[in-house]
Image (cartoon, rainbow, N blue to C red; front, side, top):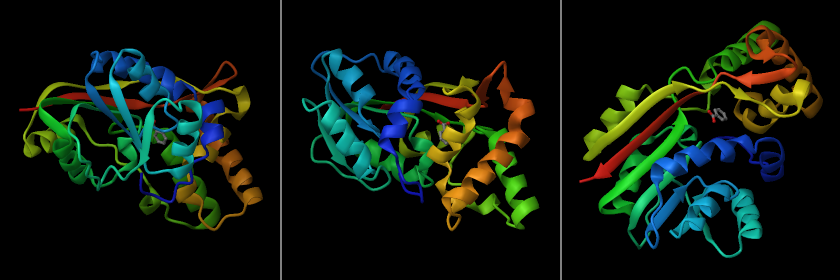
Length: 255
Ligand code: BEZ
């Protein structure tokens, strides 16, 4: 995943385990079959690659983050993981399926990702993905933009590291590549964060590096507090934070 984001694999596993938990639904859509080859694109620390492997599929996990791949190898030494850029990879073998959960929104060149996925698939192979869609985390983005504009005179709109397309936009890109889109849905999934009052601060510390280049640790903590205050009305309920996630889930076949 290309951005200024520094991946903190331990925090990812400790505080953001919901990512893999929700990803299990996407594994259901993949419906892994015994003996088929599957590439997990943006595999993080490997939990879903492992889940897929328990169904008997042969999985390779790929991620751009060295730290994530190291942690994945440590957790699942029996599986194969490799560092790779989803926007620019080529791999010798072809796969029956390419799977991706909560990763594609970090990639701002979707045409390149889709072309690489196409090349990685065998004829008849399927691409199953879930990621943030149009409007995803809009309340959090607005709170960050407002704090940086009001208190630091900064226009943060250009610092947004994410790609959140509409379903029409993404399906069209897939079709342009030659895929047949057999399933596509754009749905709300407010997601409860762990760690009570601190939940949004953990989320911000994990995912928003691009916005805060040049700020020291202490200053960032102050900003996170301000962002949380702005977003509280919309996202904090009964002692817990809920992110305003909007997901796109797609299945496409290489004809
Ligand atoms: C998401 O899973 O939707 C997401 C995660 C981190 C940053 C932005 C969106």
